[in-house]
Every structure is written in structure tokens, then in C-alpha cells.
Image (cartoon, rainbow, N blue to C red; front, top):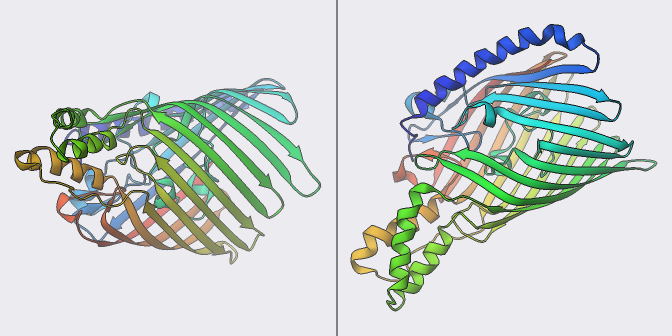
Length: 425
């Protein structure tokens, strides 16, 4: 799968927004001293290169790395800039906005607005937020884009790269319960989400009925979290509509075996109306010297074309003064097997059956990665990171990669070397 021909104009728009963010930071400086107003931010300048000319990486499935196909390297995959503004209207009511400029298929003000909500605290233990809030499904839910906050260059793609939901338009409520040794937080979330994904000429991924709950336990050294969420996909991929219509006609023709297979393929190729559930368990440990983190997730979907899998990672690091080396292992195993033809469709093999089977198999994610990283905290608010990733992708398991179509049927070993400077202000 190669990048869309219009990605150049999108990327230029993104560069203009980087410049705009710099102007906003300069202009907002005097405002930060105003009573009740707090201004902060974060950013990453990153470079990544890989050893494959026919396969290109992406940080998440919302990216479209056109430059990686041409040069084998990218300055924009991990680079981003974030600005957060908080304004206290009263001791119990705050307004929060967060804007992140990063390389994505759609770069506009709407998609760059990560957070925009009002937070109300009717009591010290209860928080209620309404507006655009973060998707509370993982350990990194509060700082998924803040590179300075975690030891790696990017969160493990097997766990964090497959899902395009970063924020939710809706509301949530969290209640804190304080014990002698730990704090418990119980949260419920309700809303919808929308995000652009570079499938075909572009796909506006929309969800409705998004509901989620989570429980977090925070102690001196440990943070444990369990979360569950579910949603319904509320949009269809435009490029798939003609294929779905053709399959529907074959399904209605009453051809023995062929019509039944066509009906099943059409159902599994339909995004709209697909129900997705996502369950995660996570644990993080930090005693000031050793740090470890692991997460396990299981996602299910009622249609095979929507990526769903069992995914996990485990990471271990050790601080030596300002230096922190780390080792991370991550994996993703799809919930659906490679689909083969069940019957001969005659003249419809090439026109309908084979494209349908190919599309179903291209969305699968099946890979394992080993990562070695090194972080140097050369400043109290900045860190230099180096990372080497070696990923083995199984046949028909390239759902997280941009690639030439010829590689889909075989395994690939991809080596990546990355460097970033992460900072917060």
C-alpha cells in the first residue's frame, strides 16, 4: 500500500501549523502570569530510519509516511509539538485546552485539538469533565503524546499504534478513594470520536455509543490499571462501497455455496455498524532506580476488516544517574485467521472474491518486536533518546505498516533506528 498522492499538500499544511504554534508560544508568554491561567507544553524532535525500501513505518495508523518511501528515513514520524492551557474560573471549575501538531493524514485545527473541556470538582474526591477528553483505555491515556513522560521513543506500536482514538467528545466522572497505602480511582466515560485514517482516498473514522470504565490503583512504587471500553463504528470506507455492492449482488443471486460466501465476505468487509470492545490490564513500577511497565489488551470486533487482536508488551529499565537503558518486548496476534477462498466464483473470482479476501487479510496485525533503548536526561526538562527496533511481521500481518502489495504474502524483518530530543516546558 503506497501513500496517497495528495500527502504533499497535507504535509505542507502541517509545517505551516508548526510555525503557527511557535508564534502562539511567544505570544502567550505574558498571559501565563495572569491569575488563574497556566500555560505549558511539550515537544519532540525526532528522526527514524529503517532498512526496507518497500516497507515504511508509522507511529500509528493515522499517519501516512510519504517521505519514508522515498528516502528510507523520516523527520516527521515522531516529531510533534503540544501546547496546554488551563484557566481556573473558580476553586472548583477549570477550563483546559490542549493542541498537538503532529504528522497525520488530516492536519487541521479540529484534529489538532486534543483536549477542550470544562472540569468541575463538586467535592475533593469527585471530578466531572465535559467536552473533548482523553480516551481512558491505557496506562498512557493522560500522556500518550508526551514523549518526555516515558522512557521509549514511542509507545509500543503493537499496543498503541492500531487504534486511532486519542480523544472522546463527551463526558466522564472519576471518584477517588484514599486508603492508608494507595489511592484508588474509579472512572466512567461516555461519548463519541472522529478521526481521519489514510485508507484509500481517505476515511473519516467515526464512533458512537463509546462507553468505558476503568479502575486505577496508585501507590508509592506501583500503578495498576484495568479498563474496558466499547463503541460502534459509525462510518463506512468510501472505497469499499463498490466492492460491498458487488458482493451483495452475488449474495442475492442464490448460487449454492458462492452466495453464502459472498454474504459472509460482505458482512466482514463492512465497517459501519461494527461493534468493537477493548479490555486492558496494565502495571507500572518505579522505585527511583528500576522501572518496569507492562500492558495486556484484548480487542474484539463483529467484522474481520476492523483490526482486532490480543496485544501485549513488557519493558524493563534501569537508571544509572542521568542514563536509563531499557529493553522492551511487544507482540500482537490477530483475532482472525488468514482468509482463503472457500469456493470457485468463476468470472467473479478476480472481480469480487479475490479483492475481498485480499482486503480482509491486509488489515490483520501479526508481529513481534524487540527494542533496545537509551535515555539521557541532559536537562531537568529535556532528554535525548536512542532506540533500535527489530520487528518480525508475519504473512498477511502488515496492518501497522505502509508497504508495497507484493510483500503481504511473506514474512519480513524490519530494523529501525530512531533518535529524539523530548522536552517539556
